[in-house]
Length: 212
Ligand code: B12
Image (cartoon, protein in one colour):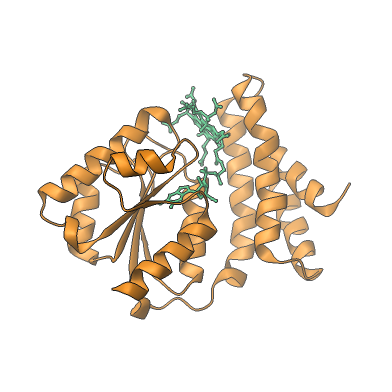
């Protein structure tokens, strides 16, 4: 079994110790951190996803896998940080109301942080009013909204409308993401952009901030 497969298997089994050990072994072998995320940690979620969909795995088991994946991310975090500073601008991020998925959001947060941006993470299940309050408080250049469910995608529209109603829309660029999203949807709800993954999001945040 390759080390990437070993790591994916450890995530699937929810084996925290094995996830931490194999992640460290890959780091020590000089493997690029984002490869460890993509091929190892997210490889584990690729085993989980079809089983969850087919009803062969249940919520507590999948949550354990997600936590194990998070343990691997913690080991990688210092390597991905290039020295965060608020000088480059602030990125405000949250998973919208009704949605508890945070693996993708956490990856986006880590990657954008690694680009030297100040990141404010509002967490999961974030109501529109909280986004509005946080924009007033932190004055971010970019706001990121995450949704993983077709039923919570529509909440993104509510957030954008609330930001407009509060008179703050011209102050921020809004990026949206999450597995069920697509560029036309982003356009339809009035977001400024859609990114398919965390690396693209980091690049787009950098582009937006550079233009400001
Ligand atoms: C893990 C998981 C869970 C875990 C979440 C644990 C956690 N801490 O996050 C648990 C078990 C809690 C869970 C619960 C549920 N889940 Co779930 N879950 C998943 C699963 C298997 C993986 C999601 C994941 O983490 N992917 C990996 C990450 C890295 O990918 P990502 O989130 O897409 O993020 C990347 C990009 O999208 C992008 N990105 C993400 N966010 C953002 C934001 C911005 C601004 C940008 C620019 C980019 C960006 O960058 C990320 C990294 O590159 C998916 C299956 C799937 N194929 O997606 C189902 C899935 C999303 N879940 C599903 C369902 C139905 C549920 C439940 C309703 C199940 C139930 N019966 O209760 C509940 C809902 C709970 C709730 N209210 O949110 C469905 C959704 C179907 C639909 N059409 O809406 C899926 C697709 C499974 C399926 N049926 O096939 N789930």
